[in-house]
Length: 303
Ligand SMILES: NC(=O)c1ccc[n+]([C@@H]2O[C@H](COP(=O)([O-])OP(=O)(O)OC[C@H]3O[C@@H](n4cnc5c(N)ncnc54)[C@H](OP(=O)(O)O)[C@@H]3O)[C@@H](O)[C@H]2O)c1
Image 1 (tube, rainbow, N blue to C red):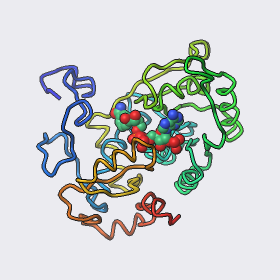
Image 2: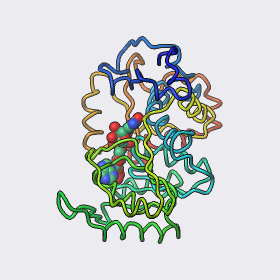
Image 3: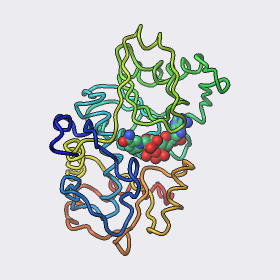
Image 4: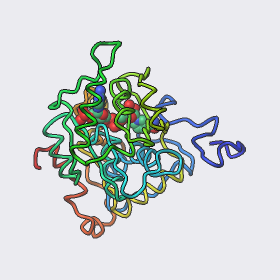
């Protein structure tokens, strides 16, 4: 961010030269050494290992801005929040933020194994989209409103109400359904379009029911700092399922690409092995090893 640029001062994500490192620029943070500005740094949670601390920065901050920060959906206590990919990178932090903020998450996943993980996180309202067999598109060009309705009914059967907020990122495959199931006056917050960028929804369901679609992208420094603070306090846990070395980074990326990973994958850069860097083991014990390592234990088949 350019501190001479007035547009950056209310919200640095609005700065003309804002870029996400490694996403909007080449060469990201996967390196032995990186040069950064002081305002790209945050305190490392002392109860976490290097890799448990590192996995949080991008997705946790993104979910925080989408749900909690002042610029996107602005979740309130008691809100019902429908979360696509609720054990994925951003979804697993979203699920925790809703539970921590006094809301009710309805989490969607695509396997029994992920249902088990989501329940272990404390999410009571879970939808297995594969088991339900939703077909929101009848063919490449036509959506099936009957399937949106079937999903909406499923949500009502679980929580008795429509979602105040829909946490949207799959994009083309789900946006029509997301706009439909949001409650009257509700908000669809989107930060991505994994399955396709050209989104379609029935505008009648949006305008006549006074819904909002809100965009969100990463987080400003304050939002990232606030989220890191929640992690330092042990209110939000890292969601690291596996650890890779720097030369295995292609395998890790492929796993994410194929939707075979839960939560986040850690990559060791300078750390010679996993588990190092915990400078406050007493704090770790207070927060609870089981909570901190839930995703890793699930990946090892120990849940
Ligand atoms: N704007 C930003 O600042 C920002 C920041 C971080 C991430 N992102 C973007 O957000 C998206 C999600 O990131 P992530 O790290 O959470 O990825 P991820 O770890 O791969 O998780 C995505 C989840 O979405 C679900 N999913 C995938 N395809 C789907 C479909 N067609 N319909 C319904 N659900 C589907 C999967 O869950 P199930 O199969 O279990 O349902 C998966 O666990 C990516 O496109 C990423 O680039 C944006």
